[in-house]
Each structure stands twice: as C-alpha cells, then as structure tokens.
Image (cartoon, rainbow, N blue to C red; front, side):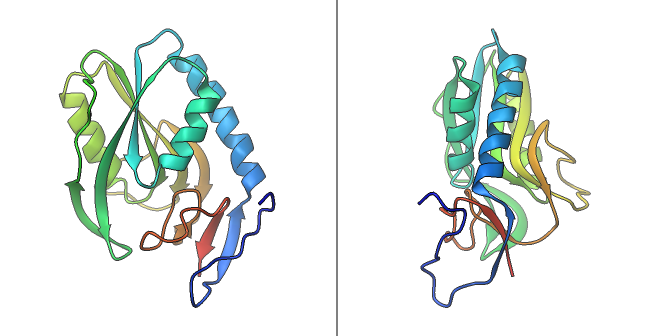
Length: 183
C-alpha cells in the first residue's frame, strides 16, 4: 500500500491522529542515515537494535547509512499492558562481542528514558569504545530518572500514546507506515 492511510484490523477501530506521514519518516530516516554514516565512517560500528519496537526503524536506518557495520539485537522491556513499569527486564543477550567497538543503540521512542539509560550504562561498562543512541521519536516530557535526550532523533512529538513504525499498543499497530497518536 502506497498511501499514508491504512485501515486497521483491530476491533473496535481505534481513533488515530497521524503525526508523521510515511513520506516524512522516509525523508528523515534518510537524513539521519547520512549524518550517522559520516559520523561512523572508518569506525568499528555495531548497531544494537532494541526489539521488537526498533526493528523497522533500524532496518531502514542501516540501509540509509550504507557503511560497514555489525547488527545485533537486544530484547528489553519496561512496559506492562501499555504502562511503564519503571523496571527494565532483559529478555535476551547480545550475540556479538561489544568490547573495542563503537555502539549505536537504536530504539523507536525515547519516552521515560529509563530503558535507554540502563541499556547504555550496561553496554558502556562492558568495554565499548563509545555508546550513543538514535531514536525515531523523542516524546517531549520530563525524564528525572532516564536518559535526557538521544544523540540522534528523528522527530519530536507530544507526550501522547504513539503507534506505528514499530510503536505498539499491546503488540498491535506496529506495522502502520506512519506514526499516529492513539486517542
């Protein structure tokens, strides 16, 4: 489907307000890819993708970067039933050694910042050359205990519940080609 609008299969159909269209997202990810490629050129890069949410963003971002890199995934969770729990659960481990490498942690959203703060602290302690972050969406909100900001951000958004492009509501709506507020 080439349209920015897509019919949802959930019942009842939620009310969605589109904040960022498919074409806006594509353009911004390509811009980020160029910025990141320039920054990481000739450095030993490993992209760490926080799954499941960041899969779509990370795949598009890696293709836009077009430089040599390793890619690994890390499954973490700080939400239960659409509510932040304040605790981070590691559901998987990295497969690749990160010592002596530049790490780019990729997530779909910077919300409370707790997930990215804890993940980056753990990775930095494991001997990485550097640990930086890239997020598709930075929600505009206070973060007293979390990472204040990402090193690279696609979009700033209001502090609303967002879905699409990897952002989900109880594992639904990740596949939407746009980012919308779930009202």
